[in-house]
Each structure stands twice: as structure tokens, then as C-alpha cells.
Image (tube, rainbow, N blue to C red):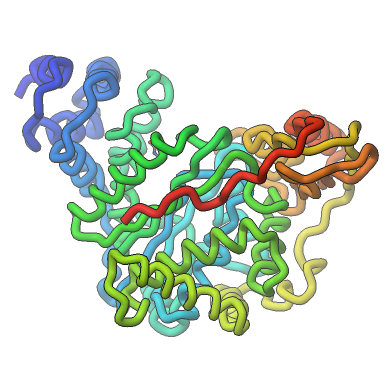
Length: 442
Ligand code: URA
């Protein structure tokens, strides 16, 4: 097989054979195909797109480039959940215990964050004693015993994607539906669950800025999941402003617990019920309601809400924390979590309405306070971050509290607070709050 012929074929928009895709991906991963040839190939994919058949092949080849988790030792339909990335997104900490309380086995691997706030693993490590690194046997046993375990990524999942993603990042080849789909889905398929629920973020703070773009990505990922034999449901949710009020590691854990107690912000609660409901449907636990119908979706949400209202989800969260070595008392006493040395309350400079809270700038502000990483090897400050008091659509008086910034370093606090204030836009006319759930794609 000849690399230039394959690049030319892709440049001309022709469908490739599975062997040709395999040749490119395996050759690049092994180092026999250089960056410049892979870059040309990726650019041809960006410009000409890939057929569904070729996208499935690319996803499966990247999945098989490393370890594929074997979760067959866990009984029941294992359901994974993935978010395409948003600011203030702490839903894993809420939906995993809700779905587990409803009987869905949760065997989830999560990542650390780079930039902005930490990832789910960083957030969980803000709970004193919590272990995110567990041997495979213990992981499987934990899910069979308690119905839930969430750990940091183990093994070598989809190394081809890791290498290709790094190249895409520096060659202007990130924006391709086929490449984004195959990148995300190769890792999800390697993680071994039987079904997948996707939270596709849409808005100024997301990869996909418009509903049609988000819908296209959601449909593409759902199709690939199904083609690989996994029930896949996607929910398109708003990311025109941060999700909830808290952005930062321990701060987000506290907000997640608030939601489990029934006193969290409305938007996080609504999204969590929708995602957990979809996980319950995907796990086949939404009663006799036929799948693929609104009945099943409604039933799933009803069960999720019942898990929250009855306190069963909060009990499951406590069990989950104890099971992984953490202190469950944090659920009743947030002061047992890391506390920041400094905080500052920032007030509104004007009277009017909040018309914008730029999610990316709030993410950056949180990173400035120390809650996120700039480089992979940086450690995160568990106690730092931002807590918003005002969101889009809220009225505000001059001098009223907009947000509080927390940090352990005064300089970082100042930098974070300045950036967060710059994220706010004000107007004289009331604006409607963005709707949270845009679409459900099955
Ligand atoms: N997240 C991924 O893992 N891959 C992409 O290509 C985009 C977002």
C-alpha cells in the first residue's frame, strides 16, 4: 500500500477501504508514517469528510489500537456517560449515584482536566481519602458489590487517538465531524460499557456553537455507537454560560452534593435528571415502556427524580465515597474539604440585567485562581475557584453580589476575579434564560 495514493484518494473524496485506513492509523501510531503525511491525510479528511462506513472503520481501528476494557465480570447492562466538555460540569458526580441507585451498574473511567477546572478525577480527589486509582479486580468487585465505581483512566486506551489528537491540535485539523466522532467514540468504546449516554454541549462555551452543529455531532456519535452494537443516546445541552454556580474542584463537589440533597441549582438538577433518566433507559430499567419512545424517556426521568427525592441517590453517593476510601462526613460538613485562605466578593458595577456570562472566560478565571492546570504536570488547588451569584436573565442592582472568587494565593485571586468580572455582560432590557435541554437524539 502506498501512503501518497491513500492521501490522494481521500483528497479526491473517494471512499477508502478499511485496510487503507488501518494502514494510515497503524503506520502513524507505530512511527512508520511521518507527521507530514498524516497531517496531509487529516486535512483531506477535514476538507472532504468521511463516509459513515469509513468513520466506523476509523473509530474501531483507533479503539483497537490499545487496551479494550473487559467488563464482562460485571452483571447487568453497564452504562457510561460522556460530556463533550463544559465549564462547571459536575454531572458525573450526580448522575452516577442516581443511576446506580436505580440499579444501573456504573463502571466508569474519568479523566483529569487540562486547562480550566480539573476533570472528574481531580474533583473526586478533593474528597479527603478518596482513591481514584484501583486495580482492575477491585474495580469489578466494587461495581458488583455497590453498583458503582468511578476511577481514573487505567491501561492504554486508544493510543492512536492520543497521537492523532495531538497532531490535529497543531495542524488546524480539529474541526471535522468524522474526526471528532471517531476520537470521542474510540475511547468510549474502549472503556467497555454496553451503552453510552452522551451530553453534547452547545453554545459559546462549547466546541459546537449552534444547535444544528451540535445535532450533527450527536447524530454522528449515536450512529457510530449503534454500528458498534452499543445503545447510544445523546442529549444536547446548553453551554452559553457555566453549568450551575460553582466552578472549581471542591466547590463543584459541594454543589453536586447540594443537588443530591435537593437544594442544588435548577439547571444542574434538570440536566442531571435528564442524563440519569437516559442512563436508566439505556440500561433497560425504564419498565415496560418501549425503547426509542417518549414513554421510555419520561419513565427514565421519573425514576431518576424518585432516586433524588427519596434520598436514595445521596445514600448511594455516601456508599460510593466510603467504598473508595473517602470520608462520607463531607456530605454533611463541607468544611472537611480543602478550604481556601482567601476570598473576594465582587459586586455589580451597574444596575440592569445580566445578558451574558462567558463560560470560557469563567473557566479561565477559575484556572487563574489555581483550580485548573496550564501544563499537564501542574497540580490543581482543590479549594480554589469561582461561585456565581448571578446568571443570564437575572436582574441586578448596582453593588449587588455577582460572584465570589476563592484562592490560596492573593495574586491568583486578583487575576481570577478580574477575568471573571470581564466574563459578565449587562444590559438595560431583560433577556430570557437559555433553555437547558435543546434536543434528545436516540
Ligand atoms: N474530545 C475528544 O476527545 N476528541 C475530539 O476530537 C474533540 C473533543
